[in-house]
Amino acid sequence: MDLTPILSGGIAALMLLAAIGLIIYRKHNRINLFWGLLAVLFSGCAMLMAVVGSSLGTIYAKPSGDPRSSVTEFFDALVTGDYETAYSLMDDYSDLGLASQPESEAGKLIYEALKQSYHYELIGDCQVNMLQASQRVSMRYLDLSAVTADLDELTAKKLKILVQTMEPDQVYDSQDNYLPEVTQLAYIQALEQALKDARSCYTTVEFDLPLKYTQGRWKVLTVPELLSALSGGTGV
Image 1 (cartoon, rainbow, N blue to C red):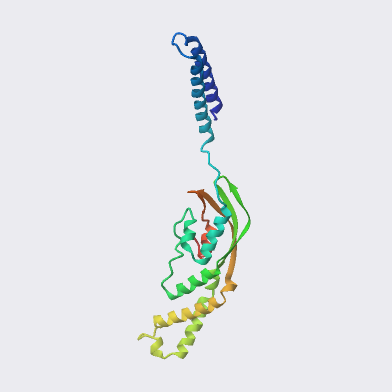
Image 2: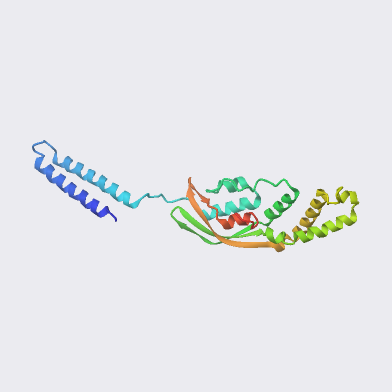
């Protein structure tokens, strides 16, 4: 229930009573009528402003800057690998782990291929509502599940070739099991072959990217679609 009209009416009634009382008793108390009425008026206005302000909630100043420019700067930084700039334009994350290169050889291959696949386009105008904004974005990325779909079969083929071209003691241990370095080599060769056709595994997703005006600038808020694209569709 909105109590603003009731409170405003009560304040107005108090102001009227105060003014009447001031007129009646001003001679007995030697009160200057002009200054007394002025004091009543200012006090009443202050109370009215407090009531109205509480009913309206927080009043925000108009944000400056273009949120669309922040989105462009953010994605430009992601695509070029300038993660320090990208993270400075995010409000809900300080680090996405993109700057940390994997230690394994296979991880490095996938990491580089994924970074090279990033591309984006802004769709339409940015929609702004007070301190909130939203920009439609189309983002391309490498679908890692598509790249690795036939990797087991391809690894087996590479392993067969290695067995045929290498000496037995370079392939098997004393229990006739494949040496770990041989299976790893076959996997790397298979991955390299799969990544040669990486462009056929590119995919695109569209999503609305929200922004928030904070600390004097527009900052990006992440969404699941963005996080999934950055990880090659492997999940958030």
